[in-house]
Image (tube, rainbow, N blue to C red):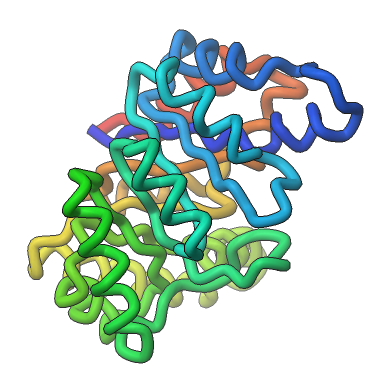
Length: 243
């Protein structure tokens, strides 16, 4: 079964826009779990423009499913994660000013850095996933750095899937995802996926990469919830992930 982890960053963005505590992020997380989410994902950034470091501390005792903290492993980020000890930490190579994640790690270029960071996290008993593009030649570097999982960066897939209605040849890109997934499984790595997955493209991805352990979805899910309601939306996403 592929788990759905709901990224609640966008709820925090809405709260921060007006100050105060509306929506209540802690209640949102608990409601997501109550409505069927199997995990909660947060991505605290240095400017704390959505998830704040204090949110992470406040969420830790409340999340009863899987707590996943993702982000760039700066000193401050690592101090937070090692203290909170979530179930999973997902490492992304974002610069501090990035609007959103837009690429995966170069596991060859950053091998020594990743090995050191991953070693610290695993010593603390935290499962480690690293953000990776659909590039077969970067998978071995993820394995040798000590990662438990890779999270396939699905932004390019989502863009090409949308274009495929008029340009079906674009789905040739999907072969890169399938080959990368197969290489990861062959090397003993587990698979996550995330970024721009939605109700249109999620089922196709799941059907063709059935080894998926988890998807992390935020922006599209929150947008859908504005029209469909949060509980219904979570159930619709889970339906796309059925075996």
